[in-house]
Image (cartoon, rainbow, N blue to C red):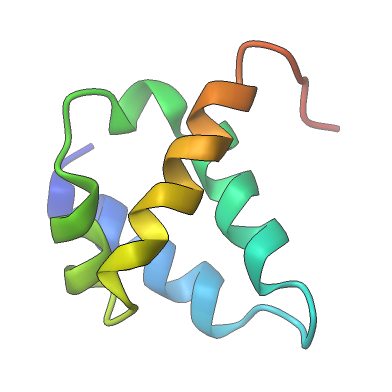
Length: 72
């Protein structure tokens, strides 16, 4: 996936997250797309998704969890 595609997907998920589930949604995005996100600039992906660039840290947390969890 390109950075633009990742930004679009992140934006869609972030902006449609239920109240109180925003951070969980960010972590799940990092888990699900961990391979695609490797080597990408997470700040640029956040900026392209129109979310605070500091959420790149939360995406990175999800990426690190990816090797330990399996999505249902």
